[in-house]
Each structure stands twice: as structure tokens, then as C-alpha cells.
Image 1: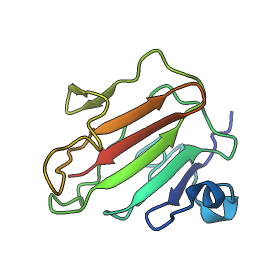
Image 2: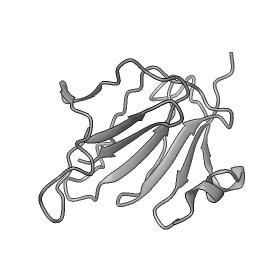
Image 3: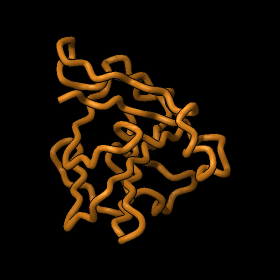
Image 4: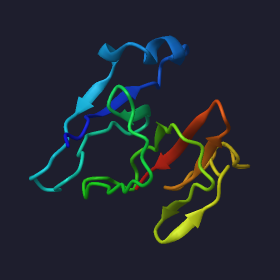
Amino acid sequence: MDSPSFLALNISNTTEVSNYKDDSNNYGQVPFKANKDPSNAWAFPIVTGHKYLAHWGFGGLDFTSMTLTLSPRWNANDHNVLLALNFSTKREEVDIIAQGAIIPNMTYGNKTKTPPVYQTGDNVVYNETGVQLIYLVING
């Protein structure tokens, strides 16, 4: 079975995402790496301080698990990255695990400090019938 490309769309400066996301030319494509380091994975660069809408293939792959590994080049002073991942089938439960701990839903966008201080794994999961989307914070 061929694995679809991982698609990423920078949505940091886009106010009307719904129109922008439907054009496949706006996406960066990352091919599947079957035999390289890391093997059986998608390794892709991201620019810190940005928001990305990401999914597998233009038809979408309804994933059930995902592991992210940060590059050793990631610096603790780098800005947060917000990754938005869509999924197709409503889930009974969605667990975000960072550093061995389950991070509760609604930790993204629900901080009382100004500016908010986010940690890797802070998230909000929309798991309604018409909207299945995970917003996930990644940082060093």
C-alpha cells in the first residue's frame, strides 16, 4: 500500500481559511519516508511561531494515532507552533499525551495569563458531528 503525502498549509496570516484550504496548490507536500532515518515516517520542517493545517493526502487519512518527535535543533526559546489536524470519524475519546502525561482537552485557548503560556500538548479537540479537528501546541 502506498502511503499518502503529509500535507501542511501555513494558515498564520490567512483570515479566510475556508477558501484558502480548498486549493491543493497552497499546500506543502511531504512524501512518506519508508527506508530513511527516521524510517516509516514523514519528516518535515516547520517554522516556529506559525499555525499549520495538516492532514495526510488530499482525500485525508483518518488516523487513529500519531507520534511527534522534535528535532534536537529545537531551542527552548523558539516560538510555539500550532498544528491543526482534521479527522473524519467521530471519536469516543481523544487522548493527547506529552511527556508521559495525558493533557486534558481545552488547554489551548483557555489560559489566564497574558500573553498565554502554552506547553507541548496543550490542545482543543472538536469532536462534534460536523467538525472533527484537533488543535495541538508544539514547543521545546
